Length: 472
Image 1: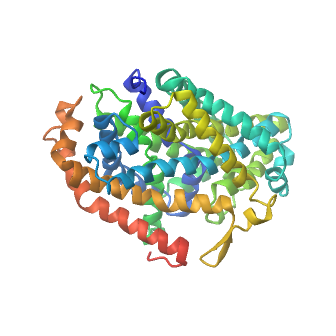
Image 2: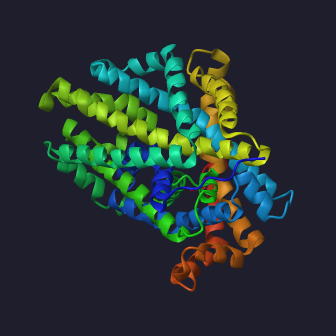
């Protein structure tokens, strides 16, 4: 028999833990660049509308499903559906997705850890060299960093929900916010920084098109950790007296503010380095920005604050990214851990070790697929392109399946669980939600246009990623 289910000790603990899940590498780097290249202030407005009009109702649905069932995603779908075989499939999707996302995310986080260590060692000039990244990711040291990272993450998980996940979130998330704001304040005092702010915030409606709107939707959905089973699992750790609508709004607002604030760091820093730069030429890849471009920017800061100051600035930045990655990984890996505990009655530490063992092997396979092992580097052909094992894992479980999982949640909550039961769960801990405009909107949107939008995003993603054709 499994032990009694843990719950978050406070609403603040849940909000910080869920925000830690949502705030990841993409928030700190990919979002600011995407906003800059896609209309600046206009993109920010579109993104915010998607977060609060599309993603927020989906988050409420996942949290409500988790809290009502008191189960992991597999158990939640099974229990609420009355054991329906067909509705167990979304539960398994919501389990396999975070398990595999953690695999490639671990590898990227290992790179961040390696760059942080190198920066602290006074080697910022080496990081800025163009050939360093390729040499580093194919060096044996990445395996040592992987072991250290997994020990830290699984150590947090082993302490449980309240003493591990919640306590880590209460420590790391405020630290991330304070350090991010500190860097922003410093950067905004530098020469030409306001040019970056102007470029970042000035609306350019000419750049808004169907593709940009689609990208904003995808960025918002992925940023809030939807479709990964995380919010279902975290919902099962919420207390009945906690407000789901209020907590979901707080998480969405926190995530959006962090992403917005990161833009006030990245763009002014770039313009301080080169006021004549065209940000539309920046890499769309978070990895390309973090490991290839930004180290050069940080090194250039030595002209104004010296080499030591530039190294300190870079170290704080890499630490911020590391914290964001670790808080995300903790929540991602908690999903399969919770499933083993709930569905197999496994003791928590044994479940953690079992998950870690399999993920360690798969993470190594991803890590060596950049040249160390030929057949993993050229793993298969997709849409006429050769992709590595790492690329394939990212393509399937991050780029493709998340909108499908979100679509299935909407359909399940509204048409299988039924609106009345969903409403009752949302009103638990928040009686004022009953009859409110927010309640009417959530019910209407989840049963109509939100599933349609997610279906279109999924279809377009499959067409673009696997067949080389985009409808937008």
